[in-house]
Structure formats: C-alpha cells, structure tokens
Image (cartoon, rainbow, N blue to C red):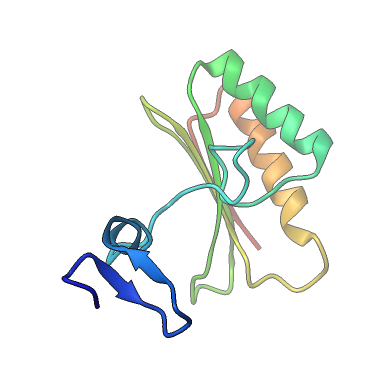
Length: 123
C-alpha cells in the first residue's frame, strides 16, 4: 500500500481505492436480470416467448418477472400472481425434460392475458 491510496498488486501497479470499493461483492444477492435488454426476467427466453412477454407487459402496463425456483413439492410446476405493481411467473426448475419450463411459462402468460390473476400449475 502506498499511503492508503490503493492496493499494490505485486506487479508494479496499484489499484485505486475507489475502484476497490466499487467492485467489492455485495452482502446481498441482487435480483437483477441476466440480460440487460430484458430487465424484468431472470431467465433468457426464446425470441417468440420474449416478444409475447413484452407485448403482455405493455398490455397490462406492468412488468412481468419470470423466474425459476426450486421447491421440494414434486407436484408443483408453476404459478402466476398478478400484483398491482408486477406480474410474477415462477416455474419449477427441477423438471425433467429439456426446455420443459418453456411450455409452463407460455401457459402462465396465456392465463395472464386471459385476465386470470392467480394460477397454480400442478401435476
């Protein structure tokens, strides 16, 4: 360290202190999108399904959050909750089968488009 101004890397360079603080990991997990172009989902969706999500979000005038969850309930497939400030679609990520969750997401989007405020999908 040179006078507390930063961190010596050992390679003859120093990282400024303000950069150390700005890149420090947070204690809290952030619930941000994995893609910056799609801020209201945690999972990237295929283009057709993403367009359907965006169109419905515009029609309902609220963001639609899609996220995978893990639950010990073997019968749970997914759920829909239309709230005053958002639409929440959750699906079980532990489903067997490749891309199984896409049909669940599409069904829940269709139910929200039909005016349903709550839905639980089970086996």
